[in-house]
Length: 159
Image (cartoon, rainbow, N blue to C red; front, side, top):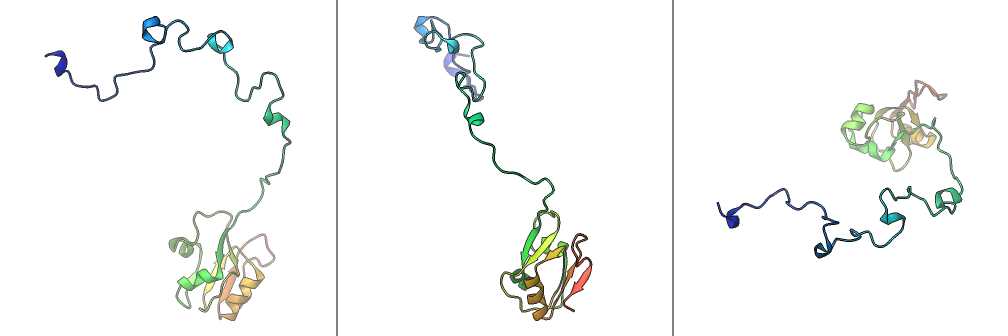
């Protein structure tokens, strides 16, 4: 085998810079670290956000906001989305998920009143706005609210 017949290394033959190997290498003497100072020394580094002893930005700015750890996030469905279902069908979380109207289950499903519904459907949700219940009732449908925390717990609305 000759030197010109050697295969190339597919994994990338070159590693990092070879520093400190003499002036002729171009990376000798100071080994690409510039002249003196903390950054030229071994172990010379600052922690993230350090500003030379000045009060860092993340401590100069005020703290803001509050995130309630007990908040409830509902998957939202509008009454206009109920047009995807046949008249007289019973709609629950499984049917909403199968059609792609809701993703993962959060704290339940909430029915909102955007749009119009023309089909009489029975929908079972955890929460519902009063306007949404009225629209489904006007179309001849029924809303079953099953949330344990509300006054309408387990009641059929719009029969």
